[in-house]
Image (cartoon, rainbow, N blue to C red; front, side, top):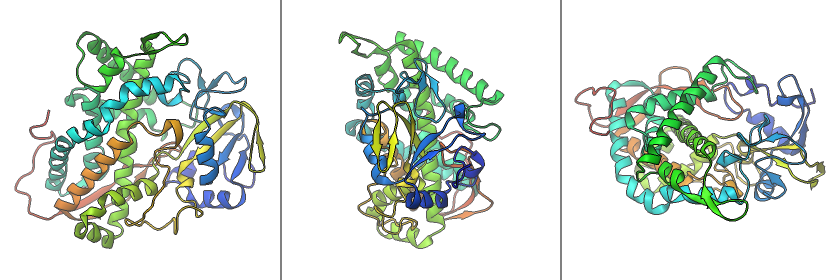
Length: 428
């Protein structure tokens, strides 16, 4: 191995993102060719970008750095493993280049646009109050499962037209698909394969139902929408594109915001003065949300593939090379953020890259911000303190930074009258 650790060794990420390694990379090797190792997918190296400037530049240059593939590479995509072209790469929305990416994105955007989110806020707030009150009634809870995961899960079920009663099945499948506790990069476990098959089967059945009986939801809009094809003639999405869209939204909707909420509340719990400040100055909550996004950086990296030879810094990146953009490192870049390792709910401006950059800026960014604000405001209104009661259990992944378990005691502002059951009262 080179003088830097192997970033494909998932044990490096088993206790959170390894910021010390990337601090060194930003200083010594901001454009670094990671050599192949025993863990490296495909047995080949890849470029590691760790500074904000280079990451933002590459993310903005979709012509030179593809989300699908490049050079004579047969596969591609946005993870380090090459995924098959025409099955994942070029079919999944986040692994698709322009112009098709833009056309499909336009079908889905109205469901998470400003007007739609404004109409959704009161319902999300009602749901969140029920979620937090149920957790308070338990006194001791797993904050990840009982609070952080619940509102994003209920929201994505609403957006996709999934019955709320099915949301925990989707959550379980998505979690199993993204869990690397019993496998390495490029490998599948029996649990991850079974979960992928179950989610696929569920998605196919739901999509067929939307074809027959469209509703006012994002999935129906994508199922019945049309986009220009290679000749410019509009046509429907392929069956695979629609199914992959469903899979992507389930995973993204249940994973990233959940991790940001859990890590952000954990940071606030460790700094009671910040909690008290937000209680006293609730107008700071949107600013705190941005700092939580920067601090958590729940999607540590995305990959691109060079489509041509490019000079970047002192390096020459060749067509077909894999290039990894480490957003979590950019969000601690000392050249952009003063005291980047200080959690500061007053930080402004805060030009973090937690949602990516360029054409693939996160489609659900507005929804994620709304969910996080609603959760934070509800907690500040109903909870005086979040007290850890056991050790954190982190995900073992270099693609998703988050917590599997976060045992806490929530201290209520008012005494809870009863202990409701597991379902959210009155909310289907």
